[in-house]
Image (cartoon, rainbow, N blue to C red; front, side):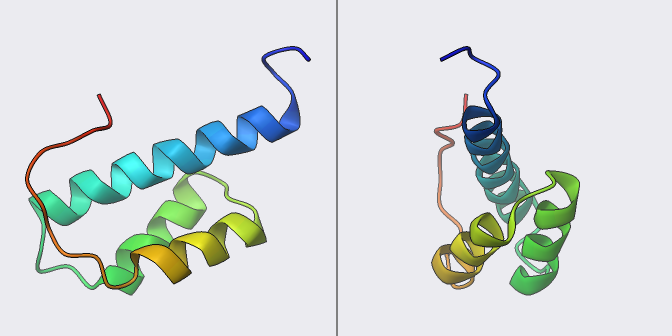
Length: 70
């Protein structure tokens, strides 16, 4: 499989979205979580399944310290 297969590209987009979501939540904890998730879904062109994953797993996350996206 070449590194540019659609599955790998989608996985990369989801990973970028999760990192971006984490950064925004840490920088702006006052922002509504649903708004930030919706922006991530559009910004990173996520599939419906990836959108559902974000909504299911990150709607109620709390701000933490540290960033594992580097």
